[in-house]
Image (cartoon, rainbow, N blue to C red; front, side, top):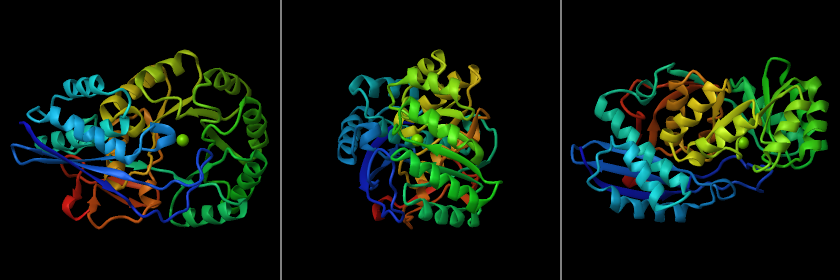
Length: 358
Ligand SMILES: [Mg+2]
């Protein structure tokens, strides 16, 4: 089989939730949808969801790189993942969202060609996974109201964005816990907004509200602070922005800076590299989560396939399709009931994309 064409299109889903995190005032998604055609008539779809403060690229740059790499991939066998990833890495350092989008489309082709859903091809652990739902930063009262709304929709795990003002963060968590009751699992994500002392102080104050973990409390480069925090708090510490590559994961593990690692396809350059991060973590006894940027159902289906493949990926934060207005031209992949995602039993990603209508 040979790749005969690679097309890409910038896709701007309308955001329906005003989403604020410690890194940036408002997240406005602009993604790139990729269509790879082969000489056997099999078509694969992928999605790049770059996010400037984390991936260092925007949609325009991402599309530019996809077009650049496309000329080099024509004639290649889509099963040559190792070869293609090496080639992409030789051509450009970084641009991992673009690489992830291409990687995703290639895996879609591999699944369709094999007649198997991707989660089975990648390992086959379960076709059912449970995602959390994320609350953006707002007034503590509004956050508590939103939390109730999400639990009424059936979500049992909430991830709460924090990191701008720890006094307000503590108040928000108090109101959320009181509003949703004791059985809902709460995770925090500070998106690098605190330092070690503020994290330790805040997490100690939050002990009575039964928060399971804190994600990326300090700047991505400060693994030493993460070690200090881990020694001082009772909750788990998950790394997100600190871990882009398998090498980052190894460094975090060697320095004992993490209890968990958040794999995002857009940070690491796709499923191929995400599998390596999970493998390194698993042998070190560190569970992983798969998170997302602002992917539509297409990119979320790819993340879900990775979670459904690997038992060491114990958590998922695959909720961005809830924060945007879903397109009638991107459908399938999975069915969802509250936080419970059931992956469809269709070859590849199982997502139907009407590329021309996007
Ligand atoms: Mg995060």
